[in-house]
Amino acid sequence: MVDIALDPNMYYASMSTAQTLYKAGELGFGYVELSPNEEFHFWQRYPKADDEFVRGLNKAQKDSGVAVRTLNPVFNWSCVDEQERRAQVRNWRRLLELADQIGVREIVSEFSGDPNTPLQCEHQWYRSIEELAPVFEKYGIRLDMEPHPYDFVERHDDAYRIVRGTNLEWIGYEFCCPHVFHLSDGAGDVERMIEVCAPKLREVHVADALNHKANDGNRYIVNPPGVDARVHQHSEIGKGEVPFDRVFESLRRVGFDGVFSVCVFGWHEVADEVNRRMLERLHQEFPD
Image 1 (cartoon, rainbow, N blue to C red):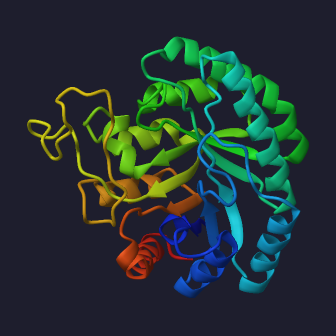
Image 2 (cartoon, rainbow, N blue to C red; image 1 turned 90 degrees about the vertical axis):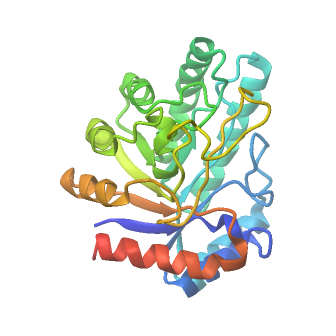
Image 3 (cartoon, helix red, strand yellow; image 1 turned 135 degrees about the vertical axis):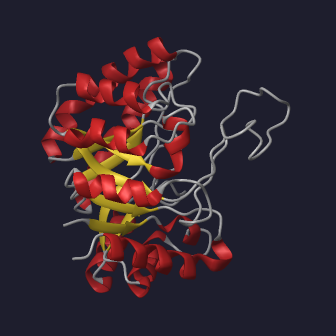
């Protein structure tokens, strides 16, 4: 049976982290995945949560009936600058301590780094894993990795090989639907990708996106042409070109029983309606 979590990104601007748990419960979710926000953990920054924050979040979990299922931090632990890499490892150590205090036993994260220095970043990522492995194992926390656009590794097959190369049972894989076309260089061969990663697949991010490689590549335009950037969306199912019927059928075929994270971004004015529809679709595809 799958767990369906809400990424409350669209609510961070209007409510505290603890309040987003009550919002998730109001919408019908039993879990949240806390993505980067300034109150807790923010991109590349040392986590700002203190004991008071932890007490408030734990109270919200108890009172709302909504559990923090996963965290989704982004720390540049693959940075080729060694001083910066060590600082990011320090950020990780603190985040793992906080995760333990709020009862989280699974974390989803990105490789980070720079696609222009992939080999050096891969070396740094493995070094960070070696340093942090005792901490993950001390707390009994699992890690699920996703290749993100503009990480040092952006393609599905390469990323899965890197994960497998750790030879650590507690490191798994996360398949990100809104990144499907970056993962596959526009091919969108979701059946093959899901089959490849099935042995370590523990989470799926659910949102839609356009294929930036389709036709002449002008689904959206970035200026100047050829700029070193990545563009994608996190839209409601049906607002993009991700083949969700094939995604869900493939997940059922491999027996997926992990976490779905609903991660639609950028539609704050209709967030409640969108998230309810997303939850309903997942319940239809994966009934209890």
